[in-house]
Length: 55
Length: 236
Image (cartoon, rainbow over all chains, first blue to last red; front, side, top):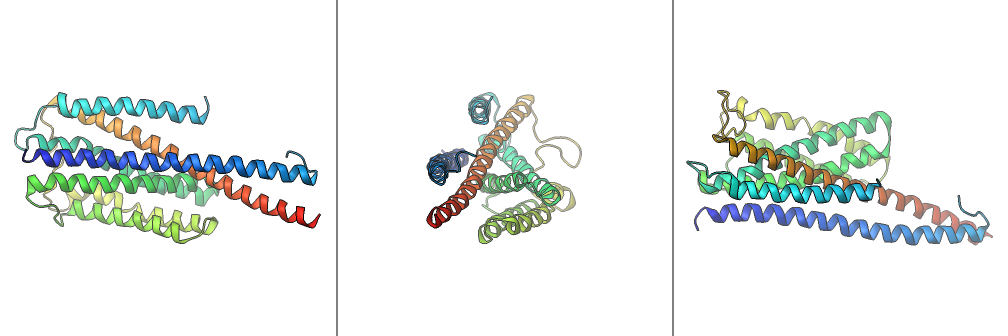
């Protein structure tokens, strides 16, 4: 095996790190979009209740 | 085309480029005569370094534009580039160390290129720590922009360090004598394709990170509006 183990670990670490960062970003964005929908609906409901309508 | 679709298209193109780059790294490029297969680490180590430097340059330029024009999108771009830059710079240090162990016989040495890169990494970890310590808002953005500008001064130092000081770090692209460290045209082609692939990965991650920061800014705006509406509702 010898030096090939260093080559293996170099590429494994690069791809694991990039995949984890991508996963973190997509998970965070999915959470943000769900929260945006929830808050937008709540704001719209309150506006309607106050008679302001959509702005 | 919507921004979401453009990001998905960029993601698909990035994956295709990455497959092509990996094929060239492990199948197409010949083994280097003296270092053997370990030299293949360089096909990603060099592009990762180029992208990290580009990321920190983007942080500096976007910070400058933020200080000048005050648009939040420049601050979001500066922060996103710094965060992705730290990820890529960490990988530069790790892959460099994994190459150095079998070739130099040590994981690390305080060589000028290695030391200046490590200082660059510390500076941008400091940038992220500073931004985390300061609350979201104009003050944090302005301080981050100034810090990002000052820290970027280390990027040219890293680039020219192999010429300014005695170093054992190889000059992969162009040596002091003007020749390059890649003897075979297939090696040059592999490095170029890897450069494009890693740059595309960075572009994709940067677009995703800016999108999350924009969504979070909208969330803060909506939360403030919700609070005001709830107060008005209680008063009625």
